[in-house]
Image (cartoon, rainbow, N blue to C red; front, side, top):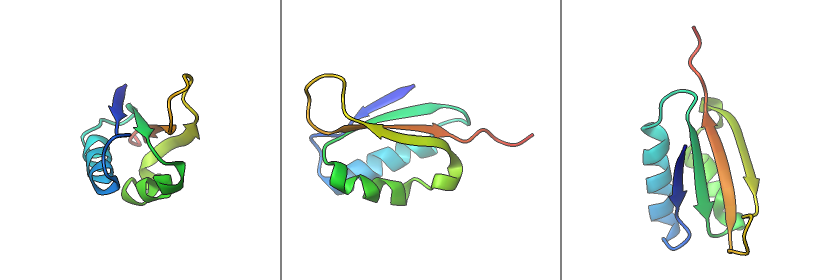
Length: 79
């Protein structure tokens, strides 16, 4: 699993880094993104197509850090 901590970057850079990481993933791999603002997380879902994901879910971090965690699993290819 790849973990990206994007909480200290401006949104355009976050989107670029997350998109590049997702595009570099193999089918079935997981990506965890630490995102600063839950309100702007919808922008992330515009650059990572939902039809290429098996699952996408968000949660608050387990520790007291600000922001949210976004978990994405890239869709496995069909045989």
